[in-house]
Length: 366
Ligand code: GDD
Ligand code: MN
Image (cartoon, rainbow, N blue to C red):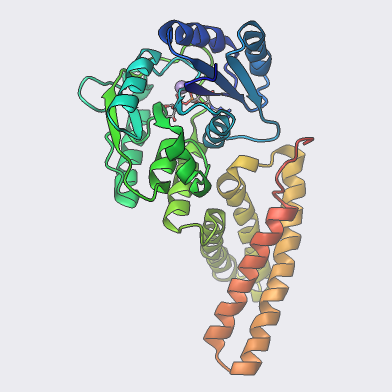
């Protein structure tokens, strides 16, 4: 019998949580045809083996294993795509989400003509007491406000990672999903071409059972990237926007160092300009490495190699920039247009080449 409800759980280093999660789901979904899909991103702690153990004992459990890939949202998307069930739920593997809501979510989805049911910490009766510290609560509130301001999403808890949805509705928007970062719910809501019929039901966000949260600064950057991608409608890649913002900061760094060296220390202008250039390139590399390419961050000796390749890429970019600008200046005589065009060509060059030479996406063997 094909499953009616697929429960998708993204799992990164959740080995010790899988058995309790499975047992809780099996108990609560008694009487429903369900399957559990565990999406592992090659966790070093043996999550995939623990999941395979479960799958051997209960064929309703399946493991989807991704190698050389990362990301909560994309893991969920691929988990959904791997099932044919007409309804699916997304739930964290660490027991922070209250699985006892699942039957009620399915019932509402089937009988109330809804597209989606979201488990919310922020409607009356819900609580986020399992969220560690005021810091996380503050960040969560900020994320909620951003979702409202930027995307017009009116949910009380758009940051929720716990919801259930109709598969046909998901299929109607899957090609527009960004799949960036953590916030799959915001991604889905912002990708729909009509307002979805959503109901929120309250729950208490529990404490994590075992292991540690993967939430960090990178999740925040990814969230901004997601909003950028949604707003710019796929015209400009969000990474390029970040890359240009970092480039802009490089101009400030450059001018500050030039000023300090030339005026402060009486260094010859050419030398001061050269020092400023190297410092700005280094700071650009460093910022791009932790922001623009936070998901492919280079460390240790790979970072040194990356820095050198970045210097090379930027040097060629600078030559191209000057070449194009000179050509346009001779042709049209406008220094402003020529200067701008050179800068744009240089930035695109630096972006395209460093994506390949410096921050190449790791393949399955990497
Ligand atoms: N496959 C895969 N790949 N799973 C991942 C990845 C990844 O890159 N990153 C995280 N996960 C899994 C974790 O193993 C866990 O099951 C679930 O995604 C949530 O990750 P946590 O690290 O436990 O996140 P959290 O508890 O800090 O945040 C949760 O609550 C937030 C509310 O503030 C998540 O549900 C967030 O989506 C939610 O916004
Ligand atoms: Mn968690």
